[in-house]
Length: 380
Image (cartoon, rainbow, N blue to C red; front, side, top):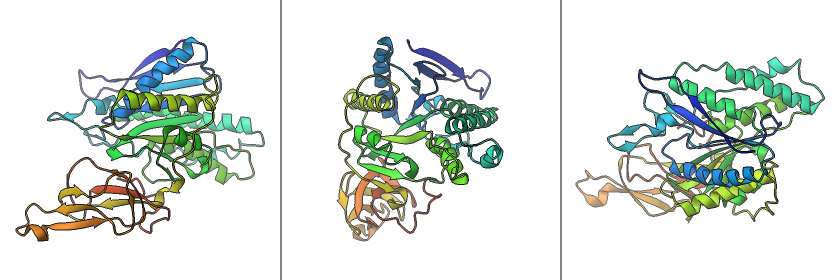
C-alpha cells in the first residue's frame, strides 16, 4: 500500500494568508493500530525534520514491499506557523509571536471530567474499554476550539494523535546529548526507544506541569487507570518526546541513523514487518525528572562555560563563569556558577549572553531535588 499524502489548511490569521499541514499516511487505515510521529512543533528545531525526512524514505520502501502492516501517520513539519516566524533574519520557532506562548506547552487537558463521563460505560472487557475511551477522547478533541490559526493547529495535530497507540514527538535541544522524556508508567516498556536512539538520559514524570504535547495523550489512560483500579484499562498510548541532540547537529548521517532507530522501534511494535533484532544495550538508566537540575543565571552577563554536555559533575563543580561586562574591576565582575548536584551535564543553551533567571544548563542526577516539584517541571 503506497503512501497517501493529505494537506490540511489552518484557520487564516489575516486576509491573504493561509498555512497548511502535510500528513503522510502509511499502511491500512482503521486497522486498529496507529503510530503517530511529528517533527518540530518547536519549528526552529531542525534535526527533527531531517530525521523524519529520512524515515519517510524507509517507510516508502517498506510500503512498496507491502511491509507496513499497521497504520503510521507522519507529519514532516508540525508547525507551519513557527516555520514562518523570522525577526530580522533570525528564526523564532519556539513561541508564537502573536501571543500564544510556547508551542509545546498548554496542550489541552483531556482528563478533566473524563472519569465521570465514562463511569457508567467502562466494564470488565478491556477491548471495549479501550474503544470507549478512544471514542470519548476523539469527541473531546473534535470539540476543541479552532477559531484561530494556533487553535486550529492544536486541534488538527491532536486529532491525528488522540487514537494512536504510539506517539513520538520529535524535537532537539540547544546543545545537548540525545535524551527522551516519557512517563513512569510507560517505563521500562519503552526502554528500547531510548536504547535504539542511544539516549544518554531518560527523564520520567507523570505530569511535568507544562501541558506538553506527548503528555496530552498518555495522561488520560493513567488517569482512568487510577480512577478505576478494579477495571482492565491498559496504558494504551505509549507517548514520548525524543530530543535529537543539539540544534546545530543537522547532518544526513546522524538523521539517517536516527530514522533507522525509529524504524526499528516501529517494527518492534508491530507496525512494520521484519525482524528489528534485539535492542542494543542501554547507555543510561531512567531517572525522575525531579532529579534533573535546571541551573539558572543569577544575573545577566556573558557566559564562559567550563563544562559541556557529557561531562560528569560533582556538586559544587564549576559549570561556567558569569561575567559582568560593565564591571570596572574585571576580577570582581566574574562569578562562578556551580552544579547543585552530582550528575551528567545534559544540555546548555547556545547563546552566550543571558539575563537573570535564564537557563544555563541541565544536570541529570539520581536523587529528586527539593526545588523540582512535580507539576511545575516544564512551565518555562
